[in-house]
Image (cartoon, rainbow, N blue to C red; front, side):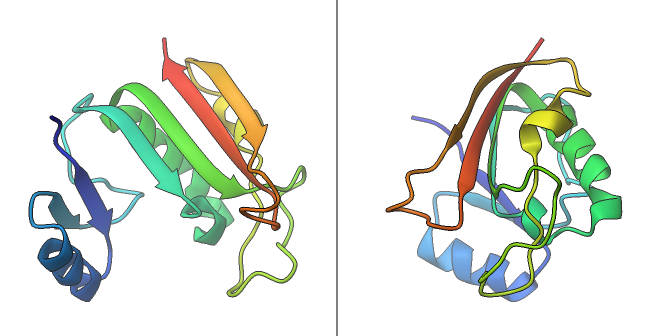
Amino acid sequence: DFDVSGVDPNESAIKKAGQNLPHFKFKAGSITELPFEDSVFDFVFARNVLNHIDSSDVEKSLNEMFRVSRKYILNVEFFSENESQVQDAPISALGRNMYRRWQNFKVRIISNVDMHEDIDPKKSKFTLVRKI
């Protein structure tokens, strides 16, 4: 028994998500300016979102995820040690090193593991942090 909210900048995606998942709450918005109060969520999750964010907006996006989280944040992003282009991605994407990026925040890194290659051969990495 928990509440689920989602954000997308595309109004059509929000409408379709609301039709498919009527018990969830969806809002139009940007990861760089999340439309929520501070510390409102126990768990914040993003999958392959930051791979498509301009490098100049990644820090602001992380600040927003940190701001709205009360406890945990999980990123599943294509990984690259030096944040370079992901080869063979269906659309242009930059690999992210979330472990390194989260070290600039007041968090404890709980997990930073590769997704199994049978599930995602592009080398996504799960990075789970806990606010401290």
